[in-house]
Length: 438
Image (cartoon, rainbow, N blue to C red; front, side):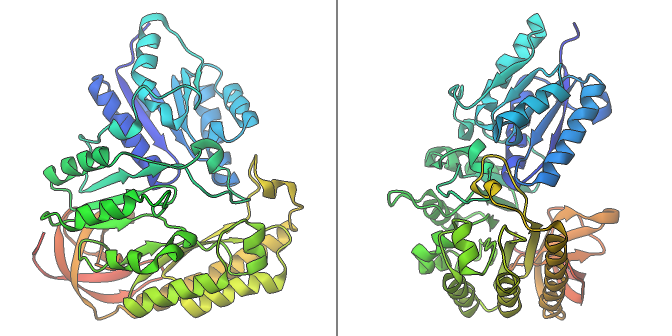
């Protein structure tokens, strides 16, 4: 039996999943197993996502393809663990899988690889009942060649949203130890990362008056290193607990004046059905207060269209809210019935109604995004180049995390640019100065 010497990771889902894949890469790096392109890899790792039905379908189709090709496969991520039937379906699609590993248990990878290399042991399922070999936060990301460092600050959730299956897999919220988080940050600082992303299922959770997030932000703000920090998703109910404390974070120039605040709906009855812990008035207060304090503050949000029993007037409440408060980015999702959720028990709306509402919402948010971007035309200032876009374009972000595409430069450069035109999803810029500051 040929031993596993190379791997390829296929990652689906959120920034948290990307960080899981980076940690998996660190474990393979320690085992001297090297990353290669998919076609020649000895082993394929599929890091899955269970948030949406259409994402599930893409993952299952991919698994079916590599299962038919009899590739050596390890599956991790949320999807196998949100529902027993999905786990069985995955096992049927990839009958010769080496292992299916719960995302909290990726630290068992070395033992799994050794067992396969030595005795061809396969078909292993490691769920959350088995304790991690080591806490995931102690797997430190060292070898990623990127100007961006991703820091997971916690895992799990304290909510019980009626539409979400992620908690089935990720479990109850627990924050990672501060000493581990500081240890990872020290590595990023030593590597001179230009940008750090803080990620979690909800970055702002406060449990028993202990909030790792605020302590971490305070730690970063006092460091001498020049770095820009993007804060991940924070649910509205967390912000409402102490909105001024959240706003004070953005007084530091180290933090992008940007936040992802998912509203899902702006109608109070639908929010109650969703078991969200805020109302329309809370949302209006948050959006207004952030923009009053920082007039150009960028807000991203999420909405779900066609939630079961959503009336046309209730859907209109969400459109009216978007029209009034103008989030810079809105992710529109058609309601997706997920396993093990309360909403799955409700009668869904007619698919034509859901499709029509999704189309209306998408048209509105495109218009709002374009109008928000148009207000930046003529702006000049600092832009950190951090991403390769379509057709090898160079993309960067200004201090308000506004996406700016420029005509030259390399990833990691801090340049001075002028925004010359607006598009729906980004701005066009031209470089007017050399790197300064960072």
